[in-house]
Image (cartoon, rainbow, N blue to C red; front, side, top):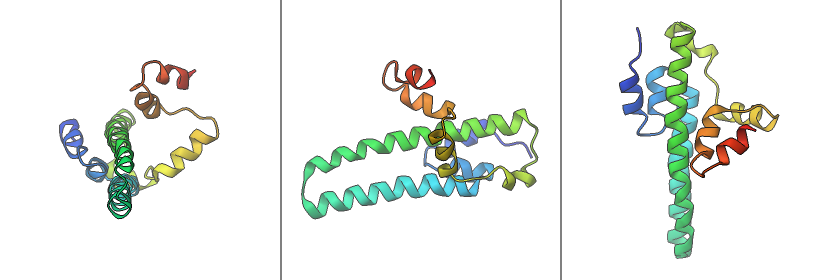
Length: 128
């Protein structure tokens, strides 16, 4: 069964749901937990300490959301380009931390370059 780009993007408005739709359960769970967990941690610390400046840390949520959105559409393109059967998708499913390990070892990531492009020129600097 071929997955729809429209539904992938629509589900991706909640981080991780687009990945669940595509069958990438580990990846979707890592995005969902990071988004919800970060919201709870920052909200909790802000309310406990009553320091309003901590709410600035909510600025990371759009970054997680954008990365999740671009990652889900990138994975859909990968699946379509390589004609991968959705029954065999588990061998391609890995957590986001595995990908970050590749970045730390010097491999570049297109989705990360797009996110860095929020600041003019930062994506180009990352890409070299």
